[in-house]
Length: 125
Image 1 (cartoon, one colour):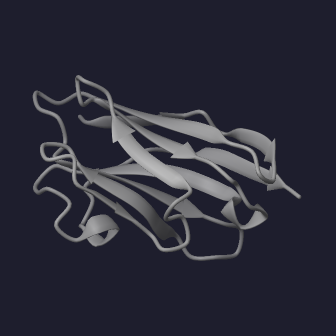
Image 2 (cartoon, helix red, strand yellow):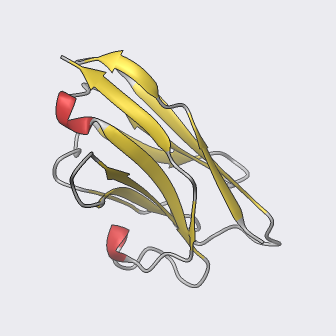
């Protein structure tokens, strides 16, 4: 069974930085598409960024473009979300998700098959 485990959440002041990690396990092959999503209290979940594992093609939501960077390690089993210039509106639980079937043809709209349990990010102003 594929597992995704997020780490790196925490509390920082506005303007600060955090790096989240998502490590996958339990599969013979790496997931072709991995995305980061977030959900703020009382709001719907939104897609933040995605990366197609094979090509490295990335997608970013407009709200984080220029501030967040998604990347992967050489083994392509760990995905990172580098978050800079954090704002209070970036507060929320961040989830890692993966598609086992396709590359991220639709960015974060790509249907995801597996989800992590999330890591909390709190930005104080």
